[in-house]
Amino acid sequence: MLKSLNPFALIAERWQPSAKFVERAALATVVMAVIIVVTGGAVRLTDSGLGCNTWPTCTPQSLTPTKAMGLHGIIEFSNRMLTDVLCVFVGVAIIAARARTPWRRGLTRLAWAQFWLVMSNAVLGGLVVLTGLNPYTVGAHFLSATALLTVAVLMWQRSREGDLPVRDLVVRPVRQLSWLLVTATGLLVVVGTVVTGAGPHAGDAHTVHRIPVNWREITQLHVDFVYIVIGLTVALWFVLRAVNGPTAARRRVVELFAVLMAQGVVGYVQYATHLPEVVVGIHMLGSCLVWIAVLRVPLALRERPDESGAAGAADIPAQEPAVPAAAR
Image 1 (tube, rainbow, N blue to C red):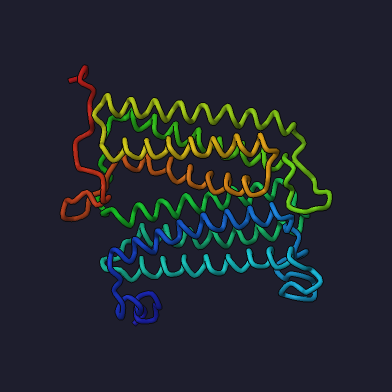
Image 2: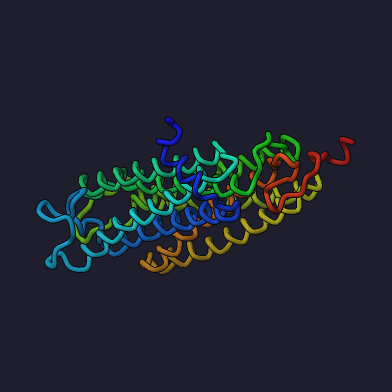
């Protein structure tokens, strides 16, 4: 009787989404997570961060922007409404994961984690406005969006896998190198966030508090981390070749290297041209693509078969962990 009162159970009784539908729903949340980062950047780069001067309403008297607020109010309010669209996509992912038979609890939890991250980031967005675009709250807002993107990528990966225990495809030192690469990239993103907080694009045409560090010096630190990440990427590629690692993993490392190179070109152009808004926006998109690419590398070094024994990860061949020839 209690089960029949569960709305998700009722949906599952009447609708059975295919595995492909669940996978596409998960991928859609990845795309929307990227879009919310880029559009959030557009709000800042157009000086529309305070287009709506309060939260959760746009003005103390109006939920929506008024005519007097002009284009800035429309841009800021549109970004807020895009969060509602994101919630719809996450909601579809939750329902699809829960309705699919057999029910995959881990996949559903990842979908719900996205919902709570969206809600927390909405509150952070409100704090950004209420604190007058304080750079620390702006940075926390961006990093929370990156956390959402991380969980979305993990759900997308899990939607293409089975539920049996994870099976490693390479030896432990190779896996550790891949996670070192992820850690270095995470630090690169954090330092890039500090660069944003110290840089000239504050999000509003009026005077806004900035992080009190030398913008050019922190930019150089950001570049140093870029070199570290590129070096680790190249090193991992050579290691995977030496141990005859999975073809899919080597391909993903190459994809990561290509994205890093493109992002490096964009970063150099934006620095040399004194940070034009359009180029900075492209760089924000690139940061999302770099993060997605680096997360996919360690995920390609293991597999999670389904009950039939199939690898499940769509492009990862089942094999024993590779061992260097010298160790055999």
